[in-house]
Image (cartoon, rainbow, N blue to C red; front, side):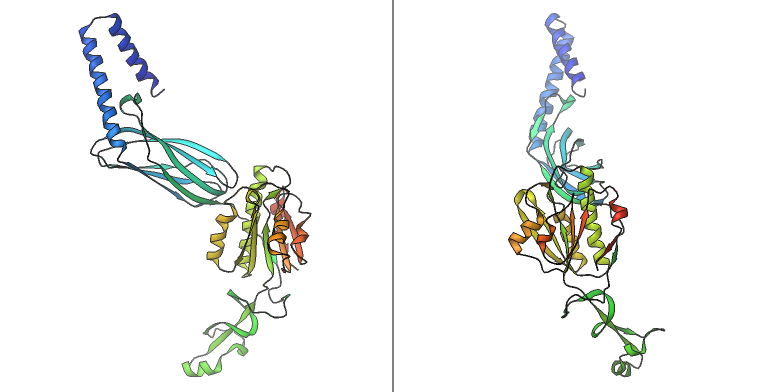
Length: 364
């Protein structure tokens, strides 16, 4: 509609000049054609100096916050420029296309914010391309090679998962790893040294240091960690899954990992990319490591595959020595046991009541 009306008026003016010798209409037609030619020439010159820069912010719950910055480096104005913005979710395959438009003054800048509809959780790749400078009335579009890209991760909605696990009990006889976040009851290792507070156990007082500082100092014992916890995100599907199940798989994986982090538990995260027949393993102990892994969970789509994450892991790494394995998948995971001989807790993301069913995980 934006171009149809001006095009129809111009066509009518040209047709009128063919059937009439009115000198005034000829002057008007000549002036219009001259303006169109001048506008196209300006756009053609300005197109070489147009630059795009895309930016995007991480979000949770499927919302997106994207902006496009256009920089006109030429001394000529740009009456109308349109840019196609494509948002593609690498995890779910969802795609959203929008057309953005702006006008730019000579040497001017324009920022176009875009609050798009939900494209689900996952790694969102934003592409800004198909740039057109439309000139006056949009009748002579001039293509431009300028383009930009941006990407960000939309986090899934999290829910509270209570992890039932005796942090003092270790399945390993030789503990060498301790929680960097919480104190425990292992007096052989010191978690932190601090001033005495009312109610502290007198056995924790560091008498030698207290004498030097002339005030009571206590030594908090460390919390031993079980080094054999493992969380597996199996992205191999036995059959095509609904988008809700894929969202649930991401939500469950991130929620479980967050719950383990909150308890100060060291664990190994394992996930696969079915299309590439690849499997990855990462030890997670600190929040920065967890923040780096989440985008990797969501950077590729789950896909139908005959090879499960468990089978691929066993082929690449051998059987796991983990004593507790939380195995998350869409549908039953009959071959999860090939991961290793530890206790396996299977979590099915296709269970419609997964939030209620898995709000407590018992790891003993």
